[in-house]
Length: 244
Image (cartoon, rainbow, N blue to C red; front, side):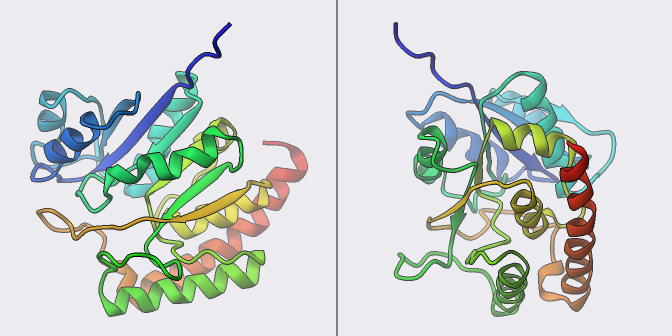
């Protein structure tokens, strides 16, 4: 008997990404990887949802803008309710080269990792787009913070190019950070005993439009996420103790 193919879902959170979403989906459809795709239209004011539907994707349109965390969690909830084995998170703006999906998918398929992060900053890797100097300073701060709190070295804690197994789909469908989720989610996953792997990928500049997330270069972002991570550690300890 041949083992059944895992059900794989690509989750694309999108806010005002009309200029990019069709091309992102076109690149995904061209891959030789059997996946479903759900676009989470996060209360966009433009034609993001229409463009995604016309390109052949399923779309969930949120009634108002929840932010990246709420949009991604909606994708996890859809994946959990529809019994997907693996979820892959991809940005709508074309920054993530979906040709690397096989790279981040492989350790999850082989049961080596619960989460795989596509990283821009691992040593001795090909250099692609690495964001502005100010943003890299912010990323460096979170590398050190997460290292101190968890004992794990994650070179690119703000990367949203990630693959998750069924265990993490179920956890994140119920518990997922809302505002600026990527660094928090690493700490949260660690508290649930997740095996996290980081692999080098090459990223690109945003393909069009403007990013709705400009906080990485600000003190506000760093302070808010730092406090959120510390609070998450306390809350998660209780969740783990009493079951999730």
